[in-house]
Length: 266
Image (cartoon, rainbow, N blue to C red; front, side, top):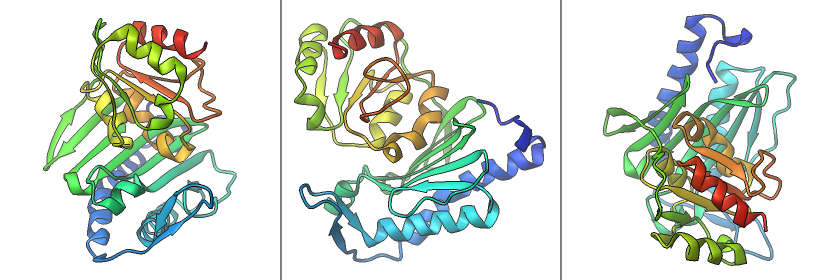
C-alpha cells in the first residue's frame, strides 16, 4: 500500500514517517548497549513464556518515541496495555521477538515495529541488532539494510518441485498434515527457531515456504509490509487473512502455496 492516503498527503509527512523508521534501529541499538545483565520472568504458569526487563524497557522506549511524534495514534504492544485512540493509524510492537533466543544468546532475536492505516499495513521494520541488519518496507517495496548497505529484496517466485520448507516451531511439526507436506515435496525440510528472521528470509528469496502455528498478532503483523512488498504470499491455513489461531503460511510461489493449503485444510 502506498503512503498517499488522506492523512499522509504531503511529501514532508511521508519523509518524516520514513525517517522515523530509519532512525529507530540506531536508537534501539544504542539503548540496548546499556544492558550488561537482564532479569527473566515467566508470563505463563503452564509453559515457559519468558519476558525480560529489556523487553519492557524497549517497548516503552519505542512507545515514547511514537507518542512524541504521533500522539493521537493507537499503539498495540506485547508487554504493555493497548493505547486506545480513534485514529486510523495503529502501531504494532514486539520489542524483542524471540525472547528465548535473546536469553540464550542466539543472535536471531529482533525488534519489530509495524504501522497500519485502516487495517492495512503501510510500513514494517524488523531490526536485528546482533546481526547488524534491519529490514524496512514502505511504498510497495522492501529493503534489507546490512552494514550500511541498502538492498531491494524480492521473494523467490520459481515453481520448485523441491522447495525448501521451514517450520519455526515444533508445534507445527506435530500436526499430521505437516508429515504429508514433507513426503510430497521431498526438498529441504527443517525446524528453525529463527522467529521473525524466517519471514524476512522468505521475503529475500532464501526460504521458499514458511509454516507457522500458534503465533500471536505481534509476532508477525509488524512484518506484513516486508512480506507483501517482497511479492510473497501470506495467509492463514484456510487461505484467508483472519489468522484466528495464529496459523500462518508464507510462500514465494503461488502454485506451491495453494498445494500446501490444500493439505493443511484437511
